[in-house]
Length: 287
Image 1: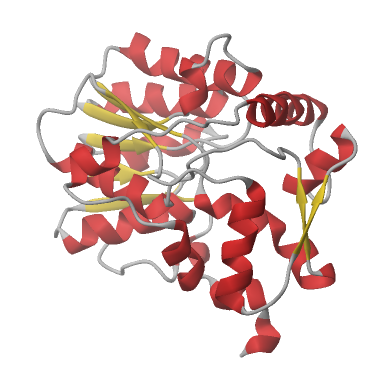
Image 2 (image 1 turned 180 degrees about the horizontal axis):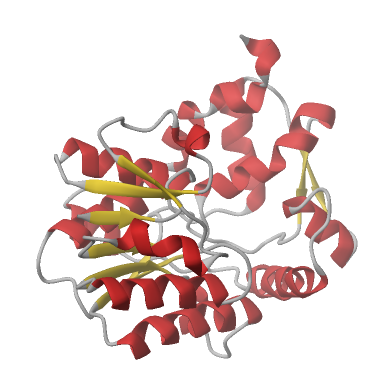
């Protein structure tokens, strides 16, 4: 039995469908079953909350493999999940971490993920660590300004990165959960294409047939709003500001061939991802 946390998100939803297609016995940890209504019915639902460890024992009963994706900037959810996994006799954890943990020096984002990785490692449960770079779905953070004003706020200017499709992360996770040979491994996952924000926006513009303007952010606060239009807690805002500065300075970018090596195919492209989400960028009025 495989237990999935974060099943209603971009990665978890794709992973649920991947595992369902393989005929794998799986269970979804959800706070609200209604949010999982669109996921395969064959997957069991277990109501629980990583913020409330007392709810986890029934969810973990009979589980031997765990996909662990936690939210926020702390490590309490990770600690609760790992404790429940140890008590249940889980034999393998596939943990979603971040490429930031391997940066030198390690930025704030990396330190949070490093603390979570340490909890998993210290448990002694064999684990696989997935360390993606930026997600293609981060472009959905631009929806408010695209829909309201036809522009995107750019906090990184000439900086380049190779965003990865969450569906590819899910495919790697499915592989690690269902095949031997992945325990003790660390996989840094990126797409195969390096972009500036302006180049990403041009692809979105071409996909939806609408001219979009790119406006470089003028202040750290405006940069934070490019990802969190309604603001972010101070610690997260500081970490984002630091991360954007590092991205701006990295005009070469980095990418890996890990997705291709593991899956035997090229990573999905950003243009293909945009085509799948064109209706989302256009808004409900497009239908």
